[in-house]
Length: 192
Image 1 (cartoon, helix red, strand yellow):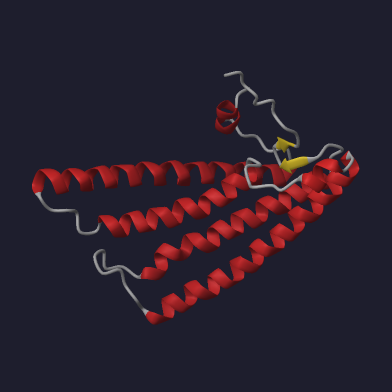
Image 2 (cartoon, helix red, strand yellow):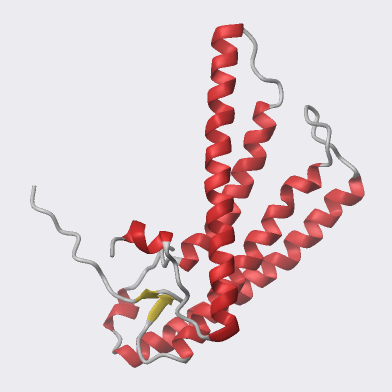
């Protein structure tokens, strides 16, 4: 199964309710990312056409793209964690035996999860602060705090994903980068 096929048919490697939560979050992330990218492309294309055909840009286009970039960024963090696509510096990790790699992955996943939940707390404080100030977007006219709701949501999803990764490694004999991605390197060498 190719990477693209496995992403379409994601199934959590976790049993029971944890697997159901993991699969639900995966589908939610996929919808948010796909919808965000499509809407941003459509908005940008419409703005370019409006500018060159009609001589005027769509006045709220920049604000919509700002909202979509925030949404895509923070949904994408959880997506990267789910598919084991986060950046790794693995010189020490790779030198360890399987048990050591699993222990280190559990530690890394738990610490990263705690950091995400810490950032979740401060992002909620930030959104509440924006809410209390009552600022609005100039072109669209709705409260600015609404566009930043994606930040705590992204940190929440990412924190849950790393926590589930730690649980997966605690309950498995193999080492997992995420609940569905087994540790290892693919042979990507091609002859030129």
